[in-house]
View (cartoon, rainbow, N blue to C red):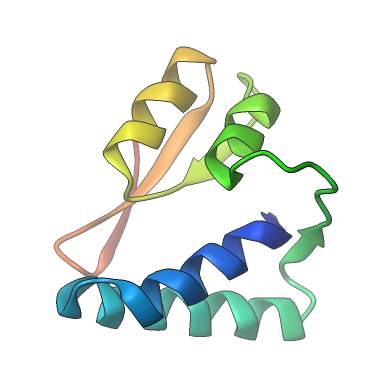
Amino acid sequence: MFIIDKTMDELKGIEILGKTIDKQAVKLGRMLAESLIKQKSLKTINSYSKKHVDDIIVSKANNNVYVATQDKGLKKRVKAEGAKIITLKQKKYLIKE
């Protein structure tokens, strides 16, 4: 499993500037990602691009890739590239779409 370094920056930004409901979800997601990174279960991909993190994710997407996201726009773009989606349902179930 991998995470793009800019994803953590985006989560931190949403946690500071986002809506209250988004802040709570993002904080949980950020804490989970940080925990997985510390356990070495999640590796960080350094992106040296100035592109937005969603654009980088879409550029890496193909039929051998799973992308975990709740973002509707990103889901649509990633599916168009042939990647599979992992999403959260009912705040407690991971679903493969």
